[in-house]
Length: 463
Image (cartoon, rainbow, N blue to C red; front, side):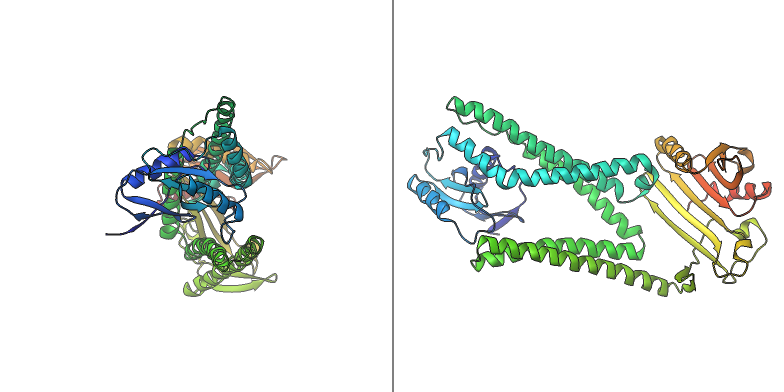
């Protein structure tokens, strides 16, 4: 039978009523609160007992204090004289318990209670949530701006919808916490003027709901990247995730080590902050190193060649493509003069795949050799089809314009051809099929036969 238990609780900083009722319920089940830390609430086993709890606040306290300050000791001595024993502390929060059946209230002056809690909240709780609110607003603005300007890139990414949803949920959490505190404060001030102490209407369930909403999205993103992403992306994801955990854990270990060594608060804060900054640079370098090394190893394992051109090292790709130049004309591109590159992103909503079959830059008569570039957008949710089509048409209008053209040679539902501002047609087409849209660019004028081949190959290819 275990004698210790660690739980993740979701009570707001100011929710003293909710914390007191929860701790009384846990004591009745045989668990006594022992420690509150960044890793959760730790309990120790006791005989099931009816115990009363009281949550008090001491604004000057800090997580970086090596030991209770003189003011805290004075408060604790006063509480002991009134029958309240200290259970644990966590920065400004001080938790006391009393085993008497009908103990005297720990705090009887409602004005002092509201003023003390407000001072404690303004020291760390509210500034932290205001900072999170600002970051969440910025990230949500960037997400919705990207969704407006380039919805396909956002929706086809395995991570962007999940991270966007996470930032939205974090924004809701910040608004809930800040708004909930000020609503309670307004009621508490009015009640205190009448000599009453206003209870907190806890909303810890909202935090649980938001957390449970974020967790599946994060797990989906992690599994998707690890299962389907390229080797370099998988390695970067794992290294980044472990780096974040390491940074958080090491910062906490540094802080607790300095507290045990009785380092002054200012020394602890400074050293902990410097360790976070140093480790951030170090771990960022580790992620970049892993990415570069993984990319180099990937090329070596794939047997990919490289060549120098224009002072840049280029890779010769030999990826499998659904549509190649050999499908469209009598040509041999396996002589080392061509590169075939495939890349793409995919989510539960969309898939977007970029493909190139182009001559190498160092090939003789490079500009005279044929080549094709094409991007296939696969729409898995039919409701997103119009959004994707309009986005593709709008994106290219920044430089040129799409003009409707005959769709039947391509076996397409709709077809567009790009024209310059002067009305000159170029060999780039946008082809709309039932579940996909193809943006294809030729280096030559395609014949009707080649158009028909493109339609036959691309319309049903699973990619």
